[in-house]
Image (tube, rainbow over the protein chains, first blue to last red):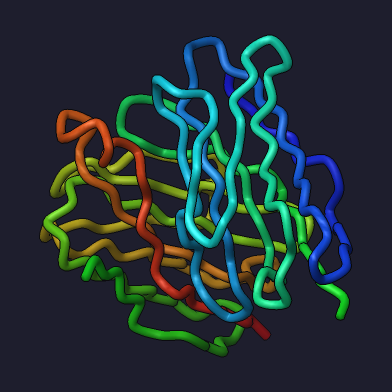
Length: 113
Length: 118
């Protein structure tokens, strides 16, 4: 069965610092992996996804994630945090053929000036 | 632009009331989903539908039902609301997996409906 673990419910960084949000997954089949972002009082937006091919995936707003099969990880990074990155981030793995996703519990990112 | 619209952003209901949450998508997507979001628990799937009049239970279907009479509309129904159903409800849609690989499994979410049951 598929599952997702996000390490750290809250992460705080200074503006300009590296952002690293951790995600580990469990899947019995080659996974589709996603990162979504949720800004306050909004729905979720897709940041990036991994399906097949290149293991380093670039997304919107300067974020990227690397699929590491040996570590069953899909960590999200951004070299330099901006105040506008403050939001909640969700890692997800695809379950089933109809496209339903299993989400992690989320990591709330705070960015200090 | 791809759009999922949830009719009510905020609702306040009383225990025992019947509650309808409506969701409409304009992207001709086959799949539609209802999730609930609670702090510290992330998103949990309530029900999903992969075709008109078809529905599948998700991880937490108890106390909920759904209706999909038209492709673009997916309704979540709380037959008798209870205080433990106070939550944020998120609707999403996605194209069928048989479509393009870049579209497979990508969910587009609505803005959410925050329900408070008193």
